Image 1: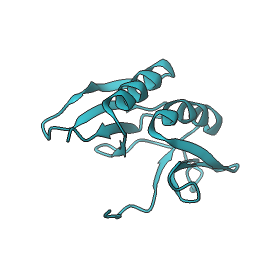
Image 2 (image 1 turned 45 degrees about the vertical axis):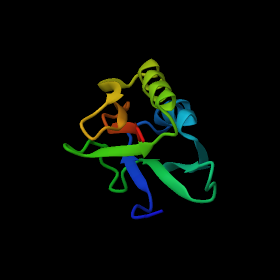
Image 3 (image 1 turned 120 degrees about the horizontal axis):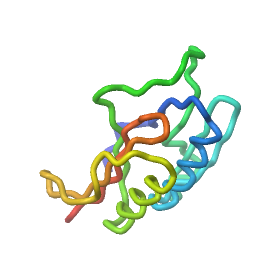
Length: 128
């Protein structure tokens, strides 16, 4: 397996609210909360519980968290059903729909949302 990303970090202005949101949607992708501090929350995949791969954080410079235009985080899902559940659960927990689950131009299955702070997150399942 090719590995090029060590971890992903997205900013938040409300760590508690954001943590509850990600707790709810990440269960469908096999991710769980493994680290909590005053500044960040870290999530790991069940296959590598010691390796934090996704963080939500208060910005280091203590300024408000903002979204990056053109920035998106894509997370792998095991199945189309997992993508569907990720997307539906995200919307139920306050996310904004950025693209309903379905097959895209590359032949893979995606569901897109904006989290509570406006970060664009997608779950992807390969169609092969």
